Length: 103
Image 1 (tube, helix red, strand yellow):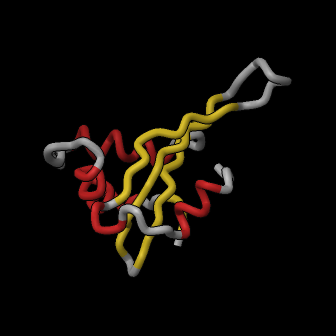
Image 2 (tube, one colour):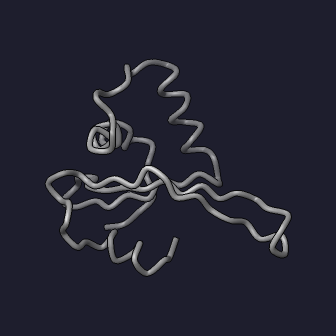
């Protein structure tokens, strides 16, 4: 199931990011939780996840940027696209979602 991340997904996201480029998880401290809450509360910051059997197996970050050009239309950055190692090279709902350019 493709959905936006929830506040309770922090631990799963940190585990998933180990497949991106991280060598370890950051210390679970106040700073980490503050940054996580800032991301969750930001209406222009979206983390889209693909969940299979209750496990987050892939995600990407989409940040919407307000813009004064192009008829005052926003644009977006997509970053931190990652898939769990056991699910790579398998077509999934998340893959099809991204392929259709719906972000």
